[in-house]
Image (cartoon, rainbow, N blue to C red; front, side):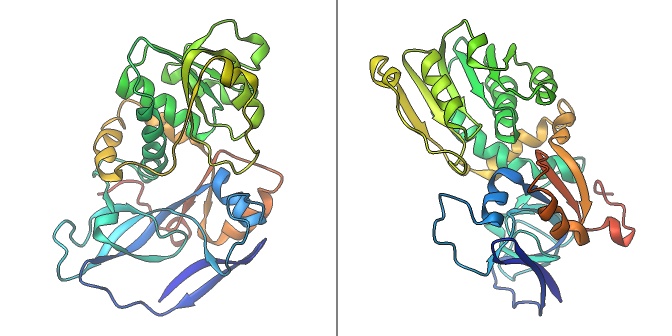
Amino acid sequence: MNTRLVLNAPRKLEWISEGDSVLSEDEIRVETHACGISIGAEMPQYLGTDPTDVEPVYPRKVGYESAGRVIQIGKSVTDFKVGDRVIAFYGQQTFGVTPSSKAVRIPADVEWKYALLNTLSCDAAKGVLKLNLSKEDRVLVTGAGTMGVLAIHFLKHHLGVRHVDVVEPDEARHPLPLRLGAARIYRSEAEIEDSYDAGLECSAHSAAFLTLMNVMKGEGTICVLSDGNRDEFTLPSAFFEKELRILASSDGYDYRKHGEWFFSTYEETPYLTDLFEREIIRDQVIACFEEMESIRPLKVFVDYKKDRGVNDERSD
């Protein structure tokens, strides 16, 4: 028996129970151990205010960051076995079924929290790679939320870009980018004295987008990593005068391939799990969404096992 969370209308969440679906030959069945709640993407959907989805269809699934153990495999599956730990995209439910090709194996020494970050890390990396940066390029990141922090992680720990600055008004979000290697963090455009070769917009705020264009060098390039679920972006005169390039990026390039690198960074940067500013159990998910209308942690970690007394932070 599976229990999954559905959104029946704005602000109307419900857990529903259903029988187990028949497994296709290329699918795996996963028992969920943890899920993430991605505030920036999921709250607009919950509230019914997502400008990228003006005619939402209900009921709809909730979430896309899931992790658990394989409990059954289809007869043609060769890349996983029962007991393997994986991340997938089936959302908030106690058991999930997914094509094996869409699941990503979690190494035995990587905790659930870190593993769940692979999805958004890959999304951020795709945008960073579009900039075709050299190590000497000066890069400015606007927004030190989840996408901004993961972009900085990729810039510094994969590409080795030497100079990365950040614009983030919330001082509570400054420590993590600095720990990852950001050179400076500005609270506003007024503090910026330098110019930059490239920029990454990770805040979803139009004011930050304008800041990037104002401080870019001529013919600089900006990649928008936010999905536009807050403000509409417009082009000021600086865009045309400087002959800037604007790129967009959404979803990842290859979650399995990216995972090979991302999981290898666990021992070096385990503190990325600080992005999960709140931890709850499954029975608290609906109440958590209600509370997040006024309180916005960066991310929420949902432990599907703690309420049953199972301690499974890593594989044994």
